[in-house]
Length: 253
Ligand code: 13P
Image 1 (tube, rainbow, N blue to C red):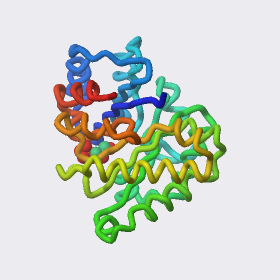
Image 2 (image 1 turned 30 degrees about the horizontal axis):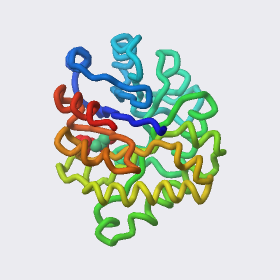
Image 3 (image 1 turned 45 degrees about the vertical axis):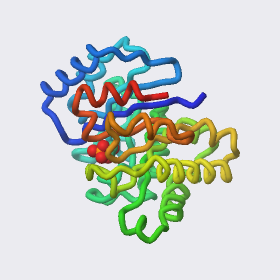
């Protein structure tokens, strides 16, 4: 069975103290993660050791970075490498979030390089894709997402691809309160899986978790996650609210 994942993306929010309190409060609430379910917290770089310590020994709960460098090491001031992340116990990294693509000019090619350095070093990427509003309005989202997948992923081997989690996040639904309908999410998730199947075969495509992101909240998580090709969510705003995120974890099928 594919992994079902509730992933929190704190983005550039919370102080260290607030973040620690949030994790404390979430851990106090009952959630019973089954073997095929995971909760994941993508926190700001300086909070990674705190989160790793806090969540140590918790089954199926992981900490992720929100980005990493495409370079191994060296004179890249302000950057954080895969090796640095691993030295503080990190196994997952979010790559290619639309905010990084938009504000920090991350291209499909750069993301291909970041994927390569992660996969060469056993760091598991959560690779984000998704279209802006104008593309959705022109109804060309499938072509847009297919290009993102092709240019960043298709040089990978099947074994490498299987290490990746994909997050589909339509930019028009991020932080806007406007969620894709469960039918819209299912349609494009099925498209993404079909594209992967055409390139890598159905068995590989079926094994890859595809998360939905964009205004996921407690009130829509069950409906979204009940779609056959939606394997959980990458959650921004609602992941900062204890009861919301706990409910989203508990909405995993
Ligand atoms: P929101 O849940 O705040 O819309 O953010 C989604 C997102 O970008 C998660 O990475």
